[in-house]
Image (cartoon, rainbow, N blue to C red; front, side, top):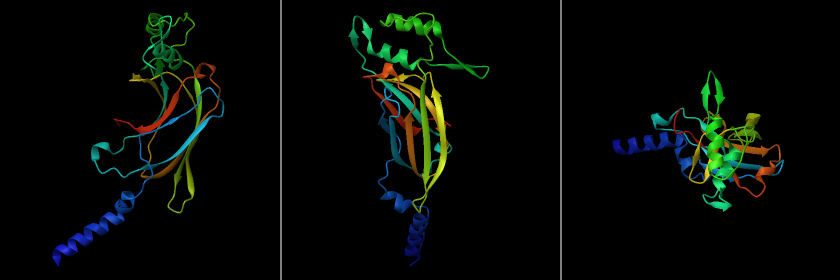
Length: 209
């Protein structure tokens, strides 16, 4: 009888913590990636996601990010021009802070682009092309109503590096409590250089606090 009582109490605790409902909740968790057309003003993506309760202390407090990813093929496109270099010109290069300001190694950026077939002059902005994105995040309450978490426009530029087939740019980071969220991202300006090129919005948790 004692063992049954302990098991019952443990199960009740799981139910109270939302463990049972989370087990059967098919709302997607991060990471989530959605294609967005940056060549069209007003192009937007939206999705619903679930932020689970974090039980591992090392992961608690880590923010969730929205990244903009510029996709490329790691191959030559024509006359010695690499597709990755075209993406780099648009996305810009990595940066590091100095006195609270972001700076970019312009000399390296110009040399790297030139070596990979893309010609730029001294007027090139090594932070790349500014992409203006409007982000709205709602938390979905248990009664299905929504509470707005953020409603903000970001003028994004630069990158935090590139992996495999994309250059990644931070839009912003968010500390989100467990629950369901609806996220809407809208492209506010048409980027002619992105016509025929792919870009993604990626939502996911940071690897560090």
